Amino acid sequence: MRRASDRTQGSATVGRRLTRKQIKKDEFISLVDRAVQWTGENWRQALIGLGAVLAVALVWWGVTAYLGSRTDAASQAISTALEAYNAPVGSAAPADAKVRFATDAERLAAAEKAFKSVRSRYRFTPQAKVAELFLAHIAADRGDIPEAIRRLGEIASSRSSDPVVRLAMLDLIRLRVDRGEGMQLVSELEAMAAGKDPRLPRDVALFHLAQIWQHEGKPEEAAKLYRKLVEGFPDSPYREEAQQRLASAL
Image (cartoon, rainbow, N blue to C red; front, side, top):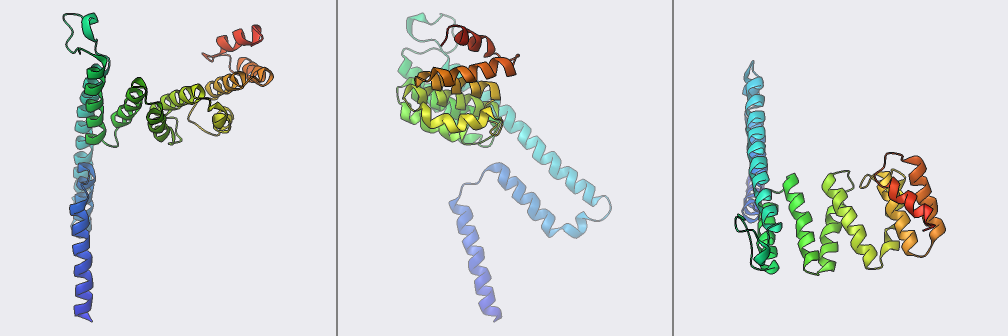
């Protein structure tokens, strides 16, 4: 029985080792794994006197220092990628421009490479999410709208009020409305306008929902929503345009 058990445990151990060899784990996850493993193996010592305090302090210091260094590096990397994306092109480029490209194709290729590097090297950071947003923009710049919509949809699938999620949602609405797919967004926008979905503020959702109804040739439905925005959200940056559309009878 013991030998069978040993073989079973041995197989499980080999399986875990093989899995770990097959999967390239994130450095931060590995750090946490080591901290958890040490605590599990040395819990008696860790609970004695100041040992517990020191153990927790050391683990906390290690994790926060690591995250801080990753964030700094990720910020620098995303800054470099944005510089490439916004770089001047051709003869219009100033003579003193630090980064410039001969063609738009070269600019987009360099920016794409930089954003992909940020996404792969700094996963689970805000900068990685920004990189994914700009990869969607690059796809749109190249005219690959289906790919842009796919990427934006993946970002916007996270139902949160994260600024990048909100920017992705706005881009997604614009592209899908341009493709004649606005009606497919109505139920989601209604949930956002009702405050049940945080991906857009209520006034922003109302405005875009009204635009869809207007685009679909239903001015009365659009007017109701514009009026609701004007009356219910006096501080909205969309209020003035909503008033203008109401005044012009859409």
